[in-house]
Structures are given as structure tokens and as C-alpha cells.
Length: 220
Image 1 (cartoon, rainbow, N blue to C red):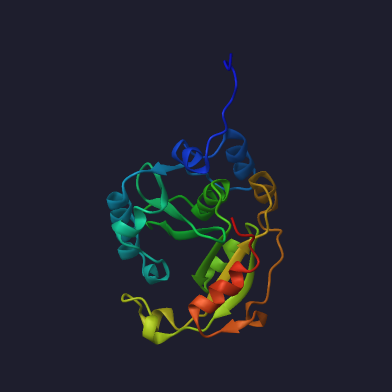
Image 2: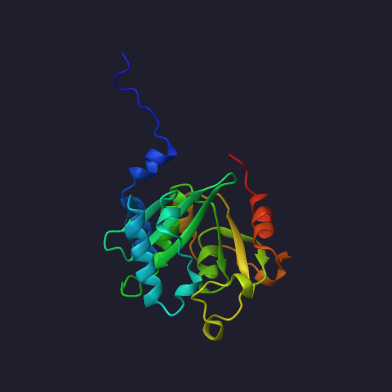
């Protein structure tokens, strides 16, 4: 008889069953002065798109966050807080899992929500990302992400909602995660090495920078 035999869940099933951070992680975050947020697996690409759109419109720096179409989101795994104010998407690729559409609506008063976002993403396989260099870069470093390349800002491909006077022309920074488990990450928030972004290899093509970053990640 196979009664009592545990069948391992696939990555997809684990994500679909994800209901938020464990009590242990919440306590560890609280010890760091961080209020945790539960981001649960979300099945509706349309409502996720609406949530991130609302967050972007409410934030003067919303252009820094990339919003995809509902059609694109339907091919990703989505995680959203119960109130729809905090979310993140994961996109599986040949080389790792890309963390995209990291957002928090300013109307939520939870501080340092990015910790819950990143821990959720990493717990579910996220191990790389890229961003317009800004405040979030420091947060990514403080959760175990290592910058490995940057791409010069290209006005031709600027987001349609980009405000050059407000947003400037920041480089795009490409990151890989150091592989630490989430328990270690939470313990070390604020203690990871800070890197000099200006010393990273500079590319002028986004795809080339991404391919270089992916060379640090094992395929499969």
C-alpha cells in the first residue's frame, strides 16, 4: 500500500498552494522592525493588472515599475495581498525565475513592504531581477541580491509614462540572488554587502545585459 507516502509537489503546485509567510518568518521580520504582509497566489491576471495599474497611478515614481498586460500575466505566477495593494509576479525562464512587477500602492501604510514581497518571491523560486537604478536597489542588496551588470538608459525604449524631469535617465541594474535561504536572508537584512553600481560592466543593449546576467545562473 502507498498510504502515507508523501508525493512532492511540483513548483507550480507549491506556488498555487502558497498562502503567505510562515509564523517563524513573520516573527523574524518583526524582530527586525518589519511588519509582514501575506501575499497569496493569485489566479486572476486581469485583477492583478488592475491592482498594479492603480498602484502605479498613485505613485509619482510609478514609471519605475513595469506593468505587463493581462495576457502576459496569464503566463506568470502572481502573488497579491488580500487588499490588492501589494504584489509581485514570477516569470520562469530558461535561466532562472525572473521577479517582475514589484509594487506597493502608496495608500497602504505598511512600511518596508518590499521585504515581504522579496521573501515571497524567493520562497517561490525567484532568483533574478532588474530595475531602474533607484531606492529599490538598496533594498534588493539588503535581501541577498548581487548586482552583476547595468544597461545604459535608452530614451527610445523609455516607458510611456516616464517623466524625464522627475525620473531622470537611470541605468538599468541586473541582479542575481546569492542563494541564501529565506531564514538567513531575514536574519541578515541590513548586513549584506553594498556594491558600487558604477563599477559594474556597462551594456548598451538590454538583452545583452540580461544574457550576461543569466550566465551566472544555472539553466534548468
